[in-house]
Image: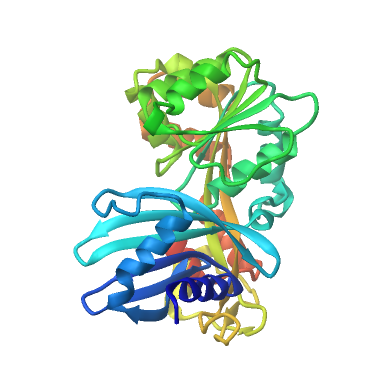
Length: 384
């Protein structure tokens, strides 16, 4: 079988199995191929070791990156047609002891452009989200690890507020999909166009809304904050574990507490959980550990669990749903930040607002019959 045909078959199989990523992983005697499905990696197949260089070259040619470079990481993308539908394939290469590992991210426009109402928010959370995104100015940050649904949430927000009266401009790395009536810009570090330089230029484009793909450094953070204080609504992502840690990081970036408090209007923590497979779910009795784990939350409920079937690859899960923790920065929270309270003090202040935590949202999905306790622990840990 030719390399071109082999790669095409792997991609067709990956899309049929609803994989988000394809991993080509060189080992001592072969090349392992794994699919990430619903956030978990599964072995797909094994390829001959002698095909390694040809596979790498073919993918590099498709994604228009340097085929002679084998030591430095490279990024690219290409389009792939499956069942008359075009998918965007994002490519990343990385050198390991056995050769270049290549990861392909499969991007589907229909999967990423999801209405805000169907992402998994509870009614009270959706009300808070609408309040945040309909502010005329301020900064809303999305936090969470890789693969936690941040990009999908950002695109859903932009689609929600996209209208003829708004000038919406984005800085992305990379642009996942083209959105109508939105000015989208691709970061290109090779020519010196980073987030901070791009943001500086955007501010002269008369924007109403700015989306910065990620705040990575102090300069970008300071400029984004300044933009939010001049009457612009700013959305971005930031990598921290919780809200107090995010506030602390902004202060460490030499942004005064009063400015942080004034600029931030809300922080949304996002995670993705696997859903119980509808084709093999069955009533399930909690174990003693699970009963103890739930504690006083252990109420009468018809718990479900997937037995595992061909459709869900024996995992018992199929599809994903979002869980969220939304912190709205009202006057009380802003006052806590300004008063130089400790991180634990800010955490206590948020708890007094009865914000539904990620852990509480995860457990509620268990009671709703959407997922399992095992999955809740996998995603948010045992701090419930």
